[in-house]
Amino acid sequence: MRIPFRPQGVPVSRASPAFLVSTGVPARAASAGRAGWSGVVRRADGWRGLLGIALLAACRGAPHAAPATLQRDVSQETLLAAPVTLPSDTIAYGPLPLQVGELRLPPGRGRVPVLVVVHGGCWLAQYDRSYLRAAAEAFTRDGWATWTIAYRRIGDEGGGWPGTLDDVGRAVDHVRALAAREPRLDTTRVVVAGHSAGGHLALWVASRRAGERLDDAPAPVGDEAPPLRVHGALGLAAITDLAGYAAPRGCGSAVRRLLGGEPASQPSRLALASPVARLPLGVRTRLVVGEADRIVPRSQGDTLVARAAARGERIVQSIVPGATHFDVVAPQSVAWPAVRQAARSLLPR
Image (tube, rainbow, N blue to C red; front, side, top):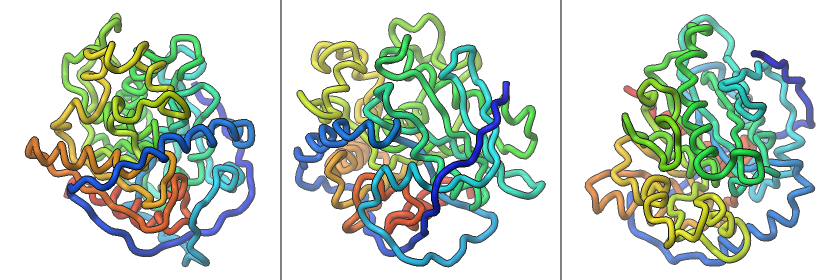
């Protein structure tokens, strides 16, 4: 089923500077980061639903116009107002209203890599994929086919455990069916990118193993076939440690609702769902984080990098000086060059 998407919004500018690369020494924990979610949640009505991730960067394709200015602290309102001009199809990957995604294809006839984009928003129903359309379009202009997915969230019927994770698995596995109808999609070059809580989901879905089941799930995660093999996972301001992110207030309070209980009371679910508990992830992984992110602290990425190193797995984290939470999904921001480079690096050589 296809539902046409009508472009809407207002123009944005583009950007490009320096970033630091880390492969693993934890920095100071920033407890203020988790608390920062409460401010975002209070402003939720202003953004009409959003968050998360997923996105990736670019590989081949038409070059971007030269950036005018590089921006910091891009707001969610700015992202929602960004113009969306490329055509897209909204395609169902399941029978439920929220089991849909937006497919965008770059110009041309050749085969193209696929970037699955997973939005964030504390896993909550009031936030949707709208704020990631500008990023998805920017990646499409770079030569990616982008598949920006919706999924059931906390507050939706069937959202939370296990529906939220199961939907994301099904959406990623549906790339096979998309490729059957759009032969340009190269299923040997699939990367999953997610922002914030969507970064958690991207890391989780990329690390699925054949035969793995979520407890309480009536069937294997995703489609009946083995999980689609992806070549990379990109976490943008990603939540990587559910137990470490859990908090009484703000976005961290949603961890309990996602798991169906406090992390300490749900050890099996935590082991299945938290990226730090799934190490080694078994897939090439990059993280990009803003040094000034007060919503998901840098310590989330540092923890994953350090624990992965202890298990013999290398995860690379790029830290963008002065960048904040939404800069990593804003094509006009100082963080965007790091995001594009990270995404490109995950493609098979």
